[in-house]
Length: 509
Image 1 (cartoon, rainbow, N blue to C red):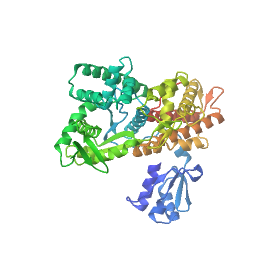
Image 2 (image 1 turned 90 degrees about the horizontal axis):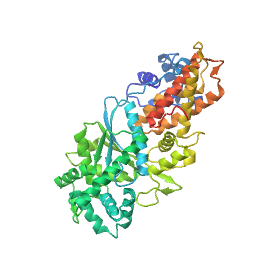
Image 3 (image 1 turned 180 degrees about the vertical axis):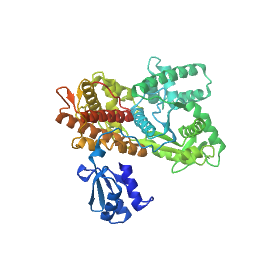
Image 4 (image 1 turned 135 degrees about the vertical axis):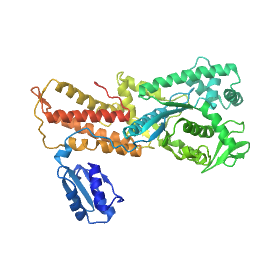
């Protein structure tokens, strides 16, 4: 319906008119509202009259002028629940979404969990809006963290790789020369013992990550590794002295701030590796857009790296197609998570602890975590409260899952009932919420903001639960045809919406 209203306004004001048609904050102000009269500098009553002649009464029952704004009240026919088509805003586009990006030899921490939840939902939203999505995961299998873990393993062979890394980090200042030498040997592959430890740790880490991805409902199309991007990035930096300068033995780039791309030991930094990653992405896929999702702590980093990349001819085109989407931090009792200390709540441990609290229901735990991450706008920090995240009282993943389970249970019960004639009753708030599903998804896809869907589904679940409490859907073994149709649409919308968020859709709870 929003598209029909927009089309009618353009017929009056012209194709280039800048206005918005959106859902009002209060139902009392209609189902849609526009600022077209204000931005078009026309009389709202005159515009309203012209729109009335263009919009059928079967579509819009009433048009009301309030100040400079025009409100639209949909007809009963337009509010009859039906499955909605998602606007294909990205039809024909190929988009790579890179997210999660854990480092082998280290723990899968909270930041990786957040990146995965956001990235997977954005990937699904882009697919729903018509794009072909390549899910990419960039993992750091070389670098100082690897050397720290390998050194830690040589000192304490019976520890896990995550614990070995933590120990190596704690001892780095005391054992810097030893660990730096291991780092060099990892790059050169010059030591058989180091190579064996490296191969074992990399294999074990990647297998563990794969299990986590399976639990979270993610299947990547492409994996990139720093061992592949390092040589490429090093060559790019060396080829372009007009972009990168020598400074105290290192190679740097002067952007918004100065960053080192090659160390004085001749080793590529994360910055150089990211240049190599851009080249590898370009070689892998001819894409229209590339999206990278990380914590907002890396926003300044990416701004400089992309500024440098746009000056390198081999990768300037892919750099211009690349967008960095950032997320905030997850906090517990106001303490920031860090993988550099031993006292850490990892992504794995949070999922495991929440599964126990959910009485063994891993699907409920995943839903609780993802909802908490996705309900806020991008860049905002999150305070995670385990008890609230599992609540069935509203504003939680399990609350949405339970509403879906309730709808499915009602449909199972209705399968054995007699369906009476399809008679359309007076519209209720539930129908007026349902009609905005496709708009919520379209906005979420356009802005790459999953919280638009999360907020919408929470409202829908609340209205459905209110309707369910007030209505006797099945009476003496019969169900009204309209009621059955309404519940089917609610079930479909909740199921599809939860799927777009990457939240599991259980049959029972």
